[in-house]
Length: 259
Image 1: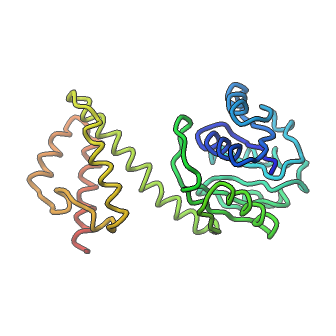
Image 2: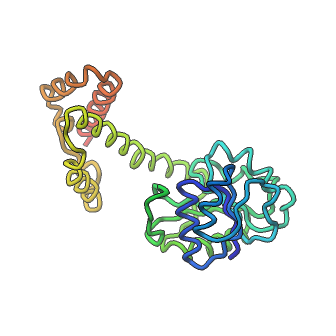
Image 3: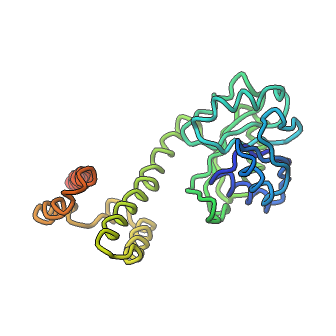
């Protein structure tokens, strides 16, 4: 398939590399920055552009892998003059498909459920991809595209996808933020973060075979008040982190009581 990629960030980079490796023709890469567009275009092939007016009209699929907040600005400019062209899709978890309504003929969503960084390759075959389309043609094209990347392609409506994205924020973004807090605490006391890696790895492995509730351990699970108060006191110079610690401890204990 002939693809135009709108964006050159974390997801766009990993998606573009995987699409190119799957044999798709990467016609153009757009970014506001020519440096960013050119860097990704060099990796995946195709032309680098910074003007949406220069986007070709003959591609099979136009993929918008940009910040959610940029979509309302970019979509009308991209779709102008392409009402009868290929399928236009975004990759956002919390933006409804209807953002394209009245602007494109064939449109949809391709949401890969994974965390992406420019510098770290991922195996798209293992990534669940959730698609949505406004008509049979869009759905068929998205199935064909995503099946070339992933072994796990499912249809999911926008109303349900927002809850999937919300769950992913808890399971990934908030967890990583806790890693960052732990790193700051260790660094302040000249301790290396990598001492936590075996613990982090085992915590992740456990939920492959146990429910998250069954896998929960620690002082909050038992509500060991003496330990909780002592650890909260250690965070006296970090009031926001202390508040987070206490709130999470209470919530973990409430869940444990409910069983």
